[in-house]
Image 1 (cartoon, one colour):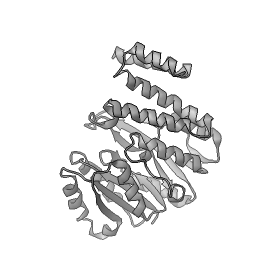
Image 2: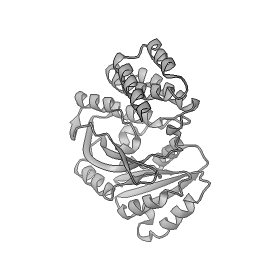
Image 3: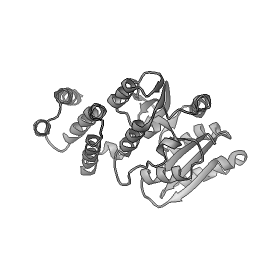
Image 4: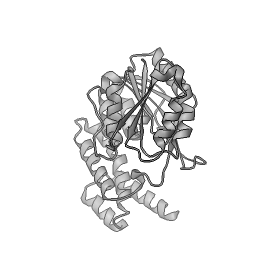
Length: 296
């Protein structure tokens, strides 16, 4: 088995059918899709099971496992634990993928089975899938990079760490796991994987449509999200390679302090930034983005 795709499922009956319509027809004998039911309370699993039951010719290539509601990290970890593929990819069940997602990935992996990480671009869409909001991972140059520090600096500066933006060779992540009960869990996982990787390939294809749901955790500012950012900042500061860490921290700092303005005033947040000794470039960007947000 060349590729395993892990898809956590939790209360997505509103979104899962369009994903299945695109994903299931792409499955080949070299691919398995592992759906992990994270204790869904809606009709997501009825929809999924009905579609899977129709796939008699590739039934062994679709696996469905169930767990109590433990969160996306444990769902992914449990999927990885049973994956048979030499490479692991992740898809969120409320997102969409390109109609050639599997084909494009397989072609690259068949051509070079020694790639540690394959990354690509994505497009953020609104909840109704009617409008494109922005592009993701677009600053990364196309190519194959072997122990290339200049390339790593670009990745850390871009700081788009979503696990579904890349495919990982299983050998380099075999003892990695997504942290349980942590927000922004992808940052921990992807950063560690990149620090281990030697051969990384990036393509300029946009293979994922990332749905922006208004009620998602990362768009609901609360103390839990703020704490999640603080934990990620602490993690990045602990990395031995301070140069790479600082590049990612600048992006995370900006996101963190922008979110903080939902709890504190602009003046209070700016005072906290100065007290925290945040780099001046981040402070200037913070002021710019805050004024831009208020202008809208």
